[in-house]
Amino acid sequence: MAKTAMTHARLTPEIKEKAEDILKKLGISISAAYEMFYRQIIAHQGIPFDLHLPNKDTLQAMRDARDGKGKRYDSVEKMFEDLEV
Image 1: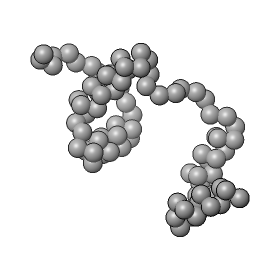
Image 2: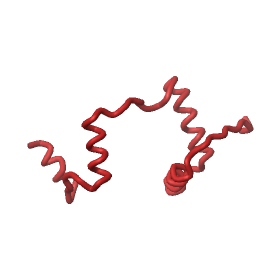
Image 3: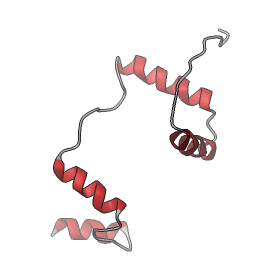
């Protein structure tokens, strides 16, 4: 079947650029990414990921991460060791 349907979307330039950079590194065209997303919508009969508002603790953790606050680890193993305590 020929691909002739088109979609149009308005995005902020920064979001578009960041997403396109990632897709390029993955070797995926924007058209292929759109089709994958649409196929997942069909397969899940809805948006293929959870949509919910973060709670106050999660919002604070996100702010802290953006500000460079929080614990840092040299390896994933050390992080998991810390979580086991």
